[in-house]
Image 1 (cartoon, rainbow, N blue to C red):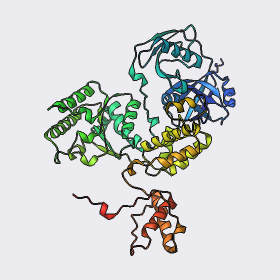
Image 2 (image 1 turned 60 degrees about the vertical axis):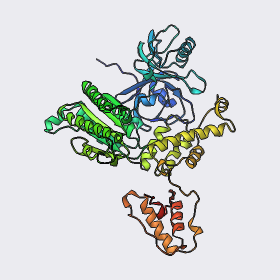
Image 3 (image 1 turned 135 degrees about the vertical axis):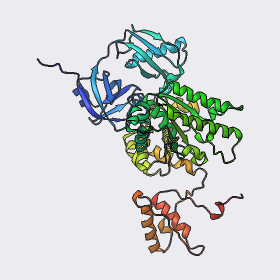
Image 4 (image 1 turned 180 degrees about the vertical axis):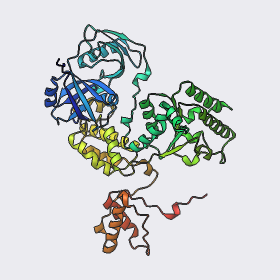
Length: 522
């Protein structure tokens, strides 16, 4: 008895953004050879899968490598995939017309907006299936409305003239973007460690009982601002699918006596009632102030109440406290002992490989040319000291540089109107222009020298130049870091000029600090 062959499938296609060519939010592009193997035509539907994540897309034909699949902007969060990661494509063919569909908008729609939304969904042929979030570009210039498809029959299907549409009550959460671990770049070791500390205690607490040890109850992320501490917490909570209570410490601080302690008790009682749950407190140092320093009585009471609540977690399963701070030295030492925060994880600025990954994530929805995509690795090497937030700002600035280049002399609404119908593309020159204007956030309070000094401008000192070159090269190699170099000699002998020239040759920032400025009047 012969089996029936299933639909055609392609495996291990590398996910990539669409350079220069505009793809719809729910569209994917494959090469003509791939479409032929799948037996599909332009405009048919294809099922895309990345592990447990699946989405349906309208397929378009583009001239690119057979091992690539280029994704529209809404497919990245739905598939929780990063640029370059492998995924599978399965042929679906032409979608049937939906008999009925239920749609939830982010806000109440006027009749005209309602009609425009349905027309756009019908014209785009967007696949409709339960749980899918669709960006309908109902405004000029690519702007649109994010709606959720709650029900489609059959599933998947497409909007048709005879489809009966039920508009559900507006839900503002529809417009909130779901952050996944695919949106976090350059933090893979940290994420692996967090999964060990958080996933097992929340979802498999019996595992620790079998080992005869207590599961961890708290994890503290610390590091400079903009390195992704809060983003990691949000993505991990969404990935695990547990109830999450995210609050800033300032939201817990009350204006009257005893209100802060009451807010803390209410937060933990809700989390316990909905276990397994994850409690995340941002800017933790605000509420866990060191009680031995200049803390008020209300700060002391709040910190003591939080310590009591954390001690109570020893008696329950399925609740983890995650906290973030960029001022770990301001936190009371009582919080930092095992049994409360078992693990303190430092989230620092990314290295070159991590910066390249972060840039690829922030530019995956941008219309980069092929040359600009190749330049990402070069830009990553020139952005030492940039945090994840700085790199996001750099990507945004590059997009604005492209807009300024295409619409010279236009501003505001005039700029947007002048670019209507224009093919936008970000080129390597736009990335270079953004690099000249964006500075690392850690250097914003420091005066850096922007002028360049070369070795040729310094006469003589050949042996010293060669030695400094050798030491400087070691400094940029992670495995051969030197402790420091002291240049000494009489005033005016060129010590600062030598260091400035070395910084220019290495392509790093030159920050000159006078010893007298290290001290203040206090």
